[in-house]
Image (cartoon, rainbow, N blue to C red):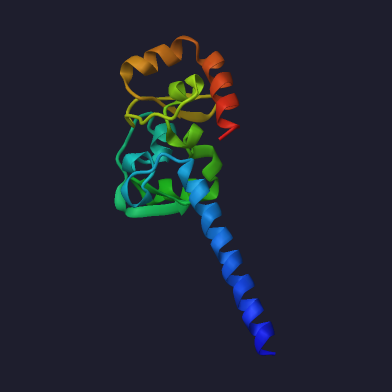
Length: 149
């Protein structure tokens, strides 16, 4: 009986380790700041509702897929909680133009585009301007790159 318990404990520990590694892999695909904060603390719902980058409150948060999102209001948090896939930035919050070029780059949260109901972030204003010149092509390229990550 003791060997069975030991074996069960080892299997349990092994499974927990695998789950921890899977969580790390998922988090590695996201552009997160200190403490796992997504979009540098900006409210993902505000991009859609207010059409601008709005800093979220550290007191109004929600964790989704290993990332902590901040919100400007409880209403925004509730909207996100009801349908997070609608609000999370594409390509893990990395620069959409960078993803189209085959790499992960940081972003300035106020450099964004909403296209076909999705949030795309960019490295800076000049990259965003380039991105917007041929958005559909860049989205196709970025989608292809991101599917391999």
